[in-house]
Image 1: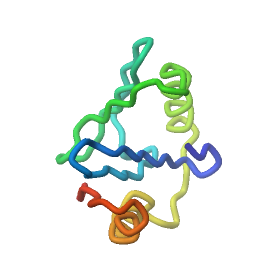
Image 2: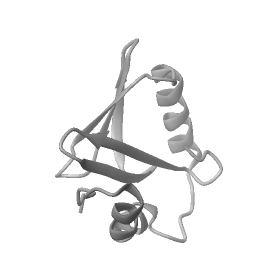
Image 3: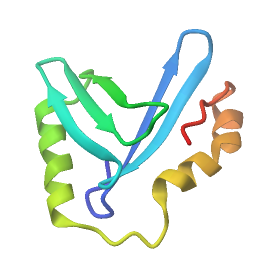
Image 4: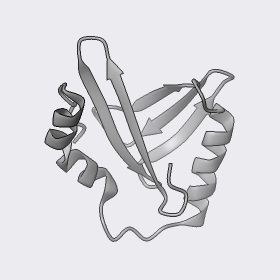
Length: 104
């Protein structure tokens, strides 16, 4: 999460050697839901309407609160960050050594 630029990068590897790498900005999520162990981010993406993030080393409520504070602040995006991340899918695949799912 980059609070100065208002962007977030989500990366997750799944069994079967496939990976999600998704770029978010404050315009790409609609709401969040948290409990003690999970942060759920509801998105505007048809292919991935909700992303569930287990709380490994983060505190879900604090992350959700930060996302909503970023949304209230407002940002000017000279570059479409989510699209930029998706355009680099092939590079991510080479780095990770596994396919990266297409979001758009």
